[in-house]
Image 1 (tube, rainbow, N blue to C red):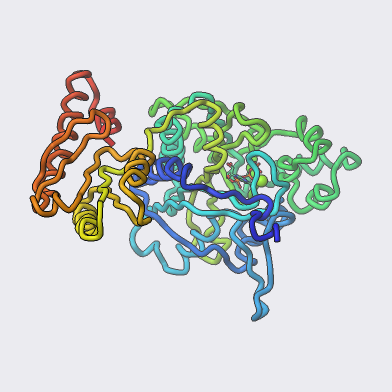
Image 2 (cartoon, protein in one colour):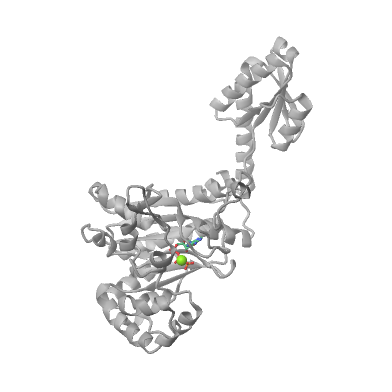
Length: 449
Ligand code: ATP
Ligand code: MG
């Protein structure tokens, strides 16, 4: 029966002891997106297969090798989303979101599914955070997108991650480049894998993204796209660089980046690290000016990026990034006897309704075991209610760190305890301000968050 307690290959569980780290990272990303005026979009886990064939591209690794595709009982071909851009673009068109005014800026946090060889940094179910902008052709949109991703890494404190950018041109200038690639790879047919041989005629640029060692070796000396882009694309690229400089974002131009999906045009970029082994691309994105039209919409410039949250967490671990400790329970109310337990239960509900995290016994444990548990969950305060306390309408609130106690009337328990918490918060704030009078407003906000 092992199969009942073994996860499927390439999937991971995020356990209760780890989930707060995910929540912290996800919250930071959400905040960054919202600061930039992006709103969340949530789309289904599965879509019609043709959507991905069309948008990701028939000749890509994702479509050719990695999709989870199946027929439903009704005979429809369905695919688990391998990425988030296609679904977001489909929803943008289906609901005519462009009518709400351009640009439309959305972000998402979702799971993706790719049938890949499972290894460190490469899972079959993984998480992406992504941002997409529709309707903006200006280089400012490219730079805004890149800066937002960069801010996420900076705010997390990552050091060993670099931004690489490139331009892969538009449809017009791509023609010359494609011909140059056909000619080059045509001379090296013997070294290409079978998939790449079939790509040679249809989409030779995909060969540059092949993971096969022999293809990679040949690709190293292939013509580079930057030498073929038209003046319009070249100007756009220069503008992106100017904006990035203006925002003090460091970057390198890497003329070999082409990205693994077909829909990209003009700017492409990656955030890459050396600290987590072979799967070092944490974030990838770029412009995809042809996609919306390809899906049946009006010609609409668009762009986006997606970052892999698992890979990001791996870099954070490798760089020993310290996250704020998980917040613990404000108060544990222990109870002795049936009546006290009922009172404690009511109190805990009242505390929770005042936004205080509170717990009481739900195990029928004795007092010692209850207090042991309070210590284990690192409750900041505790209170013990017995029959006498009920009679006297009085209870002691104990600070679990200092051992100090405060008497509180049971009838006013929530008010008294709220005051204690509030005073602590004010004290902590005063300490913070007192220690660093020159602190910037954003640092201040970051530290009290
Ligand atoms: P790679 O070249 O590593 O296969 P990709 O070009 O296929 O990446 P994208 O489609 O651009 O990746 O997806 C964006 C990000 O999602 C990647 O940079 C990576 O961080 C993450 N990612 C992609 N595939 C996986 C996977 N199988 N497992 C975990 N994360 C992934
Ligand atoms: Mg891939």
